[in-house]
Image (cartoon, rainbow, N blue to C red; front, side, top):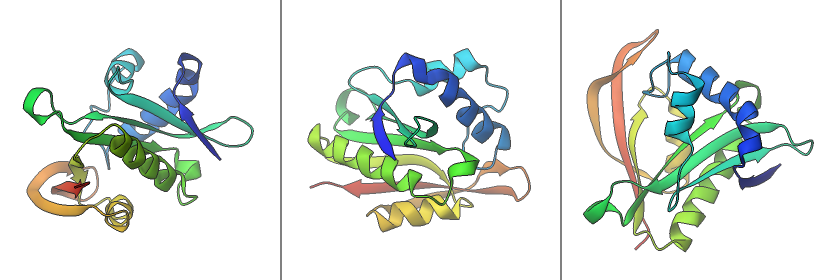
Length: 163
C-alpha cells in the first residue's frame, strides 16, 4: 500500500468512497444527498491543507484523508483531519496509515496539536484507532449524531497535543 498526495485524476476513485461513506450515514455528519461537486468542494483541501489517498500496489484507491488547520486566525495552530476508507478495504490498516500520515504532516507543518470535531461515538473502530494513536476524548455532545439504526448517539471531540 502506498500513500500519496491527491491528484485530480484520483477523483473518479475517491468519489465512490465518499459517496459510500456518506450514504451509509453512520459515521460522517455529511449530507447523504451531497453531489459529487459539493463533496469535492468539501473534501479537497487547498493550501495550507492537504488531501491524500492510500492506494494498493495496482493503484486502486482504498481510502482518502484531508487535513489542515482546524480553524482560521487564532485557531490556526491546531490541525484537524478526516478519513474515509472503502468498505472493502476496512480492517486492512488503511485508516491507520492515513491517520499516522496526517499526524506526521501536522507535526512537520508546526501545528501544536490535532483536533477531531465530530467523531460518532458509535464508530468504535475509529475511536479505538484514534485512542491507540494518542488521541483523548475531551467531551461528548449527547445525541448530536442521528445514526440510521441506533438513533441519536454522541459526537466526541477528540484531541492530541504535540507539545
